[in-house]
Amino acid sequence: MEERITLYLCPHCFEMRDTNTECHGQRMLVFHPGRAGAANRRPLANQFGAYVSRAPRWYLEARRLIPAWSPFPGNLS
Image 1 (cartoon, rainbow, N blue to C red):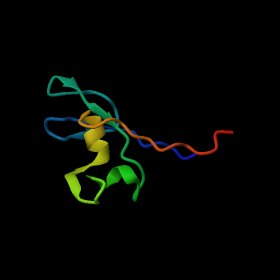
Image 2: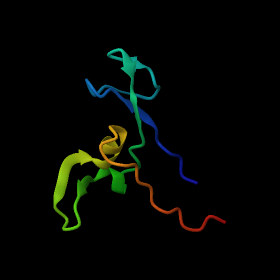
Image 3: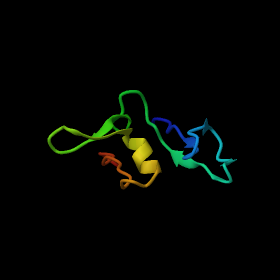
Image 4: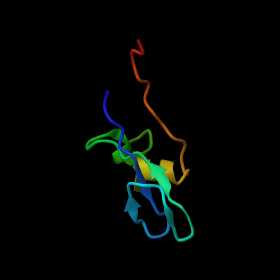
């Protein structure tokens, strides 16, 4: 099984850390950026392929601007 990358981001200054600490008086956002080439690293596009946002999907999910999405894991057995 592939290890999941977890990082923490300050929504104010965009400082990134590997531990969930306080920054600007509040907890940092947790996000999972995925491996290089992962779908959540690409900008969000609509059904016609036009970009809706230039922000990567992991950032929009971390800010709770869109619901978190995870693909069906396939064979669970």
